[in-house]
Length: 303
Image (cartoon, rainbow, N blue to C red):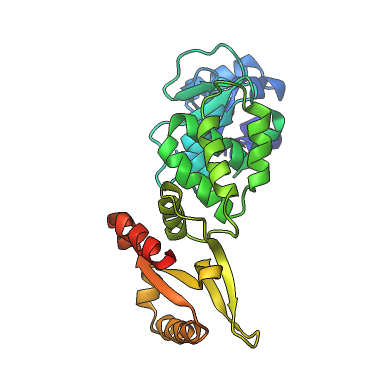
């Protein structure tokens, strides 16, 4: 970085991915004249109103997010799809940053600016040094801007243990005023998930859960631990109806591609059969292309 500003300011620029606001420079004791000189010389490059990039700092996705936050100022934070990407809930970075602020006025920006009057301190954290909404708040915001993405993000943060159902319930209680966008989507997901016993561990299990939710079938037990008559552990079923001694197993790609896993699973399946359990197996293709047949199989097995 350009050392002309002094170590403190240069370190701040480095920590902010090469960008800094005019307000930060002034607060650090840098005069208007020095700032303007650096702009004229090209050492600083204008990014947004009152936001500059050090010429030697290469552009990056993180830099664009930090610049957007600085461009809004105040308590602005990265949110919605951009926050989802930072949390690993969205594979592809949005073309334009999403930022949320509680302030009422800002000039038009070349990115998405969301206004929120319920953005509390406890809804804000830092990801890679960038002010960002927490995982729970991010998912609720997605419920308003991208409901389909919110469903997968909700399931993933629970699987990754970034958020608990209780934390979602608390957040919904805090901001769930009548008409608050996004809350209804997440409240429904929380209510559905609360009906389940056990924890789903994969996207495939989430897909099976949705099939059951749409049917009139009773709720199976997820991650059910099975033992034989001597109390010896046999394995953990993806789903089970213990009282009917029915096990549902979901086979992902890993099941087919790992010979050792295949052999272990066949041994486990034999032990389940000897213990008196019936087994239904489904692949991702079965769940996505033939959900009605899956439901029909279960109905026949449970009647």
